[in-house]
Image (cartoon, rainbow, N blue to C red; front, side, top):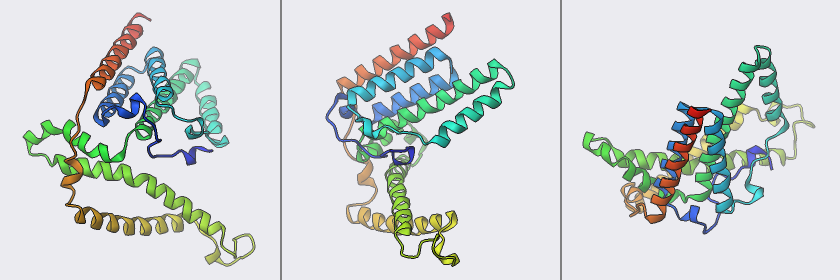
Length: 249
């Protein structure tokens, strides 16, 4: 499995991580992201990476779901490391630290997608953004938009895979036909995917309207429980330890 085939949808499971409230997971990712962005030290990155790995083990994420980057990914990393090394060891350490920060944040975000039903994202976002209602902000509309974008991303990726696979199965492959219509470039692939996405969005809009509109997507009753407060406490202690280690070291 390459990095392109990482499943951006919920991995079935009944672990403690799966049963956490969606808003709790979003708050944890936000807290870890802010801490590592403001304080991108090796102790902070190491503790966050340990939290991500331990959470994945508790959630029972199978090894087949883990990304296996292609060779060119490691080649680009090696090239970037070599370029930064020409400016000195300090530049190389900064590059590696930035790379680790990006990988940790991406891993934590994917972990939330693996353990959270998309139907719970919109209500959680609506509840987390409730204070913005005092400013007359369209909280429900924002929550539904973000949730639908998260739901539509895996569909769009699957659509791109289907279009590419269908083109490869055509009788007149580009290698045996010199006609320009037999070749499918990047622009053609994106155009076909956008056309399919527009069709899917129209069908989804009709389905949402038939089920009572977007208000029902954000009105699902949800909220934090005892296990959510325990998880938030653990993350708060972890962040405090990371900050203390950064100051001490």
